Length: 321
Image (cartoon, rainbow, N blue to C red; front, side, top):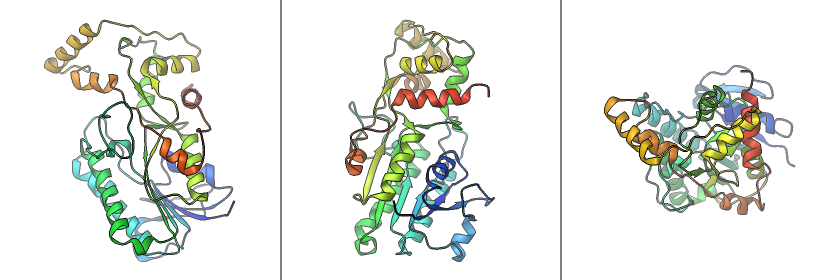
């Protein structure tokens, strides 16, 4: 394995911290973030001002993680997403373009940049993007900027890899996303009332993600967009069972009639209750993404961590917190 120097933006976040742990023994890691405190395993962390004044050392690869996360409560102003997710991506990609010694650029986008609702059974990379809301829209604008540059300036990217990753929901120890919220409900012994809805979705274990990033750093793969997900899709009922299994508790899943649930959701629309038709749709819809393209590119037949094992590891990390 060739030792590389790697610049990771958003290095203090959940994914950045896990990438440092996965890569630090074999590579030299530099960080780029809003603030630049020291971090174990990182040679030096810079601020975005250092990028503009040219004081960052040349690196072999850039992994761009920095971004405004999806606000499920819809309290963030739309322009914030575009200032961070779109404009910062343009800035770091222009930096990469101007430094020919940097051979790899990996941009973390999202499946939400593709579609809010999967057309058909499985989401593949050839779908025409039609995101809903500023999070997905800002991510796809960043994708479009990169892909347009690749098309219009091919000479600038000869012998260089430009990879756009669209991960499904990433989870692992230290994660603070929606999985924590579901765990919080289930850990209180509250029954899951939507058992009659057999929806399925894919997740992304942080261990599978770091495995794929290591592979991209070592191999030469075709430029473009790649979905990132675990191999297996799980129903919400299966996810509830995994959560309860990790806690050594019996799963409490109520299969209330769908008609009753739908009526309650419509009532929630009128009375502004926590359960409304929009939230019910999000809780019960399918969202399955194919990871076949990235596996073909890396020459692997399966991800190293099964979905249930990765989720169990994540849930066990919540215990006692």
